[in-house]
Image 1 (tube, rainbow, N blue to C red):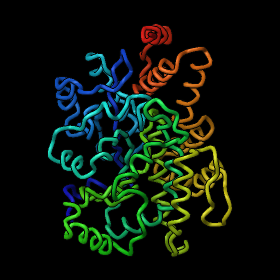
Image 2 (image 1 turned 180 degrees about the vertical axis):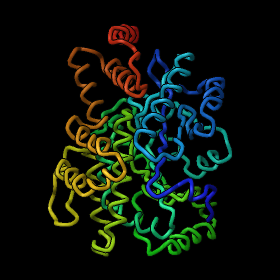
Image 3 (image 1 turned 120 degrees about the horizontal axis):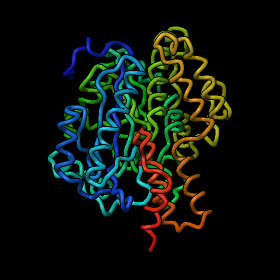
Image 4 (image 1 turned 90 degrees about the horizontal axis):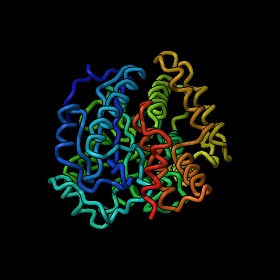
Amino acid sequence: MTHSRSTQRHPAYSFGIEEEYYLVDRTTRALAKDPPRRLLAGLKTALGANFSEEYMRSQIEISTPVCTSAAQARTTLVDMRRTIADACRRHGLAPIAAATHPFTLWRQQRHRDVARYNAIADDFQALGRRMLICGLHVHIGIPDPDRRIALMNDLRPYLPLFLALSGSSPFWGGENTGLKSYRTAINDSTPRKGIPEPFASWADFERTTATLIDAGVIEDATKIWWDVRPSVRYPTLEVRIMDVCPSVDDAIALASLLRCLCRFLDRTRTTRRAMPVPSVLVDENRWRAQRYGLSAGQIDTENGGLIPVSDLVASVLDRVADDAVHLGCVDDVDHVRTIVARGTSADQQLARFAALRLTGRPRKLALAGVVDALIETTASRDDAAAPAERASSLNALAP
């Protein structure tokens, strides 16, 4: 495997963020089945290589350049989101950063007609038609391949925490699923997903990948979609377990915590136990994060028993305190406490839906109100639709 970018452009613990968004109709709040080509071409012109169309026609993706500070990443994300929101507004659309749409049915959507996605759709069949989900991916610069694999192994027990902190997909097809990350359930229905087993080295990873390629199962390693994987395009470790976050501050906090955790695990490798955490424990915590988010404990893989997520967060933040100082992101990492205190996007969506229902709004209008809140948070701007304007627009939807 070769990398198309030099390691000089990806120094240790530099990072990049990829976010997937839906495009929704501002009037109906439903997903835009087929966004105007003029809009997509304009976004490509404005954002260049940092913009791409996604698997489903109603989805787009952005990626930041390589960043070396949380402030740089925040400014970039805010600017990109505002550029997209401004362009969409001229076409009666808006972007939302949520891992599932609250009510649009997957049967109403179509994937993009390009060779790569046509091949995936043909392979996945009905499973591919349900892949209407959006994620947050974070790349951490780790130039040495063997260190990349070692860090991938070390991150395994921490990954469920990032899922718990990022949940933004409680609804599916208008139904409260009872899960804080229903995206994970949809994602897991397709192959080569989940938290990978430990690998002995980069060579061990390459041998495993080569077996899949030589057998004709996959064309290349980009068809491996684990929750964490070594990138085959860049000298980075790519963490893919998270739901996309409507709040830029949440996304930056999680990316910053990942950077700090990678540095912590790197510098303490010789003083920690060598045995990997059993997959059965990691997978159980992953399920608990998917189902309960922040509201139920996780298994303490070091000492046994269940530990509240708030205590787990406090422990992790204490471990990486020196790394946050070194990387200049103390306040950004500390924002994770805010997520725990006020809840994830999933918690906020459920609370807004319940509040609107209590005011007497029909289910359809309450779900539309959830979309309104996602539009406003995603745009990251002060001139989002005013409450009175949103209320008037909601009333226009009433039968």
